[in-house]
Image (cartoon, rainbow, N blue to C red; front, side, top):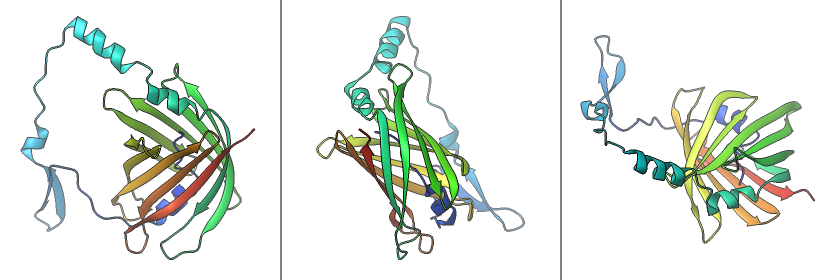
Length: 223
């Protein structure tokens, strides 16, 4: 699997309208001028008491955390060069658009992570991105990042896999630069077969804020 928040995501996301989500423990209040401010509850500031760690337990935990598992081996199957055929929408009622690109994926850091480099063209401009994906043995989650030449933000997404459908389901949050609201993004990634993979990205509709499918990318392995 390759983290593929690819292409146009930045351009579409710039227009998105999101719900105003607050992190757990936040409350709102008004200052003397009447402006709304946010503060954290006292309980959210408290840290959990430290649990002492002995050297034997630390070594065992570190070995488990750094082990290469079946999840890592599965991700490594995506190594290679892929042709990307993308369909994207700028809104729920907007017509679809098409574009293509190429992505090269390789294992890094002794097989613990996969790194993908994407190159393509968006509206006559070069579009490039780099993603990483791995499996965290400690949290039992897949974790991915995405960065590109059209955005200064780094998208981080986490999730689990539905083994019955071979689909990884990821979610993440990113602040909208237009309205300043934090938006929830959702991605599904399906390994159809050894030479075909399918990604779908969901986010808020620019007009209504309702979730809709923004991007669909079909990846075909180059022979």
